[in-house]
Image (cartoon, rainbow, N blue to C red; front, side, top):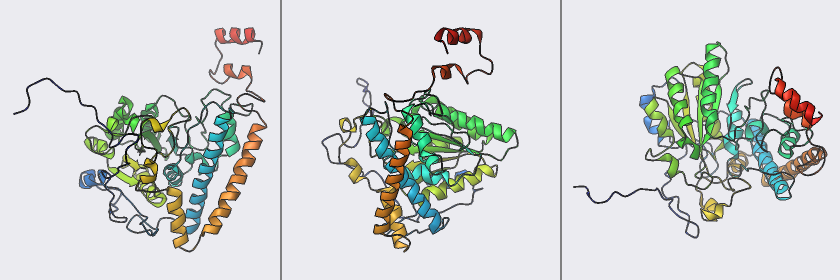
Amino acid sequence: MADAGMLRFHVPEPEVRPGGTPDFSNVTIPKAGSVPRPEIDVDPRTIRDMAFSIIRVLNRNGEAVGPWAGLLSDDELLKGLRHMMTLRSFDARMQMAQRQGKTSFYMQHLGEEAVSCAFRKALTPGDMNFPTYRQAGLLIADGYPMVTMMNQIYSNEADPLKGRQLPIMYSSKEHGFFSISGNLATQYIQAVGWAMASAISNDSRIAAAWIGDGSTAESDFHAALVFASTYKAPVVLNVVNNQWAISTFQGIARGGSGTFAARGLGFGIPSLRVDGNDYLAVHAVAKWAAERARSNLGPTLVEYVTYRVGAHSSSDDPSAYRPKAESDAWPLGDPIVRLKNHLIQRGVWSDERHAQAEAEILETVIAAQKEAESHGTLHAGGKPSTRDMFEGVYAEMPPHLRRQRQQAGV
């Protein structure tokens, strides 16, 4: 019989705290190539187990194996490698710029580059991403100018958003990158609404919703799943499980569901988990989910199992809540190293060419940084005009704002 004494409040605890030995024994990693690839019109009820497995393509020897392999050419993979390397180099320079006081804030993608870079190549022009602040790879992989990204980070005179957004909260309709919101989870349901509108308009464009593991605890996440499943919205519902929210481990938001992908099962949504550090696997799953959406088969929920190597942001100190060496123990490795090793195994890349590419990319990033800084940084050089804060908000400026602009003399 259950204890009838005083009630006890339960708070989930991570496997290890700072100072302890990293432990990922609870992460079950299936053999690469072992998870089947169902047809896109599969009955979601028949693939429930895929919400608890992990789709992998690259094995420990760098070989691409299994039914999810073979979708990308060597040339496409080489471009994907450069996209990830560019994002990592960009991150390092902008993180340094923040430490130098050239911008107020920055968020890195270290260890998560494959998720956004590979996903972008599974979409077509016109599709719309509703990203969080850790999907800059969507822009990098789509050829968005680094100088423009840096101008936004510096909030300088060439900032396309006129200094109105927090650094790294980019926006580009042309590149299918909806304006980032600092209020987490709001864009999940907005993505579903956008996808529904596309279907209502008999359009061909699909949407992609993005959320982190911590934000799945918010109500917008669940509301989005209700609408997506009810109306079969043409949307890919992405959950980036990088193990940690800003200071809490994934168990706080996950609850008793076992995995984040499993959340979709109660809504009848096909739900998959994929190795987020495997470029080939990410692309293959994204392509599968996008094809389902475009074929009027409704939403797919995809959980990317990855690890946030760096701090949550430039304002965060992860050593306060996790072991310093935990990232080294992460069993799914480094996405750049894994794709590099695969291309070497295929005979189309080498350590020497990789080192040369790193130097070339760094040179390109530094040149972009110098150009951006010529337009100003946070505390020096050109700034957006004061007039800009009054423009571009209303189709017709209301009287009280006209008066304020006159008072400001702009």
